[in-house]
Image (tube, rainbow, N blue to C red):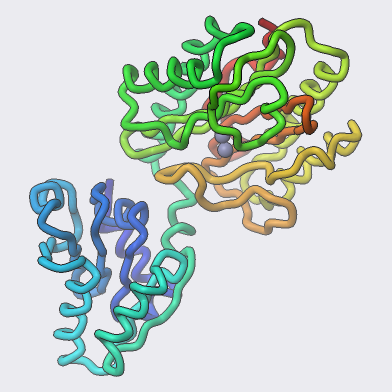
Amino acid sequence: MDYRTRQNQLLQSEEISKCDVFLVTHLPNVRYLCGFTGSSGVLALAPSGSVFFTDGRYTEQARTEVAGARVVIVRKSPLAGVAEWLLRRAQRKSGLRVGIESEHLSVASRALLMRLLSPRLRLRNTAGVVERRRMVKDAEELARIRSAAKLGTSLLRAALPLVRPGTPETTLAAEMEYAARRGGAEEMSFPTIVAAGPRSALPHAHASANLVPRRGFVLFDFGVILAGYCSDMTRTVHVGRPTAEARRVYQAVLEAQLAAIAAVRPGVAVGEVDRAARNVLRGAGLARYFTHSTGHGVGLEIHEPPRVAAGQQERLQSGMVITVEPGVYLAKRGGVRIEDMVVVTGSGCEVLTSTSKELIVL
Ligand code: ZN
Ligand code: ZN
């Protein structure tokens, strides 16, 4: 990864060029800008040279991983170390403007900085500056995302043979997570969702002791982290003969998902992708059961910008990776969601999690 170029582009951006130093505290952003994968560290980005602060547990790791920044190991917290470093700089230049990631710095950390630094330095709030740059993936990131998506896609096969009445959701999740680890996953990108029968109507139900019923949907939403990058997909299968309603709901969600994927191309506002899915479900009289947004960006984080939601104006660009995941949830009966990850190409998009989406009946 070319961390120095990423840092330079950020330093030249309108918001950050108004700061003398920009403190990156959100760890995925730290990783994106200098390669550090540990759990404690602050990157101070400055035109004169960036400095990365971490604690003694990460001495060796920081020296191996961090590129494009000088590494400083601090005895106290990295933030206190940054404050001391800033104060030394403030002696040379008064009124130093220090940018912070206001969405990621806790109230307590902000208060600590204020106490240590004022009145000599001024904090400037910024929001989503690094995240906006992370939306468009470079070739190396795309290669990693492809690998993660490929491994992620293979996991459903591990669970399907056990999908039968009486199997606990956790057993199905365990098979998938074991296969993920055996396939090289660092971890799951979020707690695996397996939701059987009426629980499939809960959009974010983690796998529980609930058993697969004799007849009903089983929803799987799962992903892995591979080389730092996340995958995310959802498939819904049916146990026993589906009712006419179940078939109709499944077909409507599938058509909504295909319509949304067909809407993905450079220049289109993400809100239009959401609208494409919602229109199909409205036509089927199911729009009010589609209770979440159509998708989200995926990369170093499982949920990152852009938000593919109603009214969102962000325009798709080639190299963005988003999910397309409409769903319909009928309380006490069951739900269906179908989710793919797609990468925006020059003229449309490519599905990264491509497996059959015809209704599987077990
Ligand atoms: Zn998902
Ligand atoms: Zn998702």
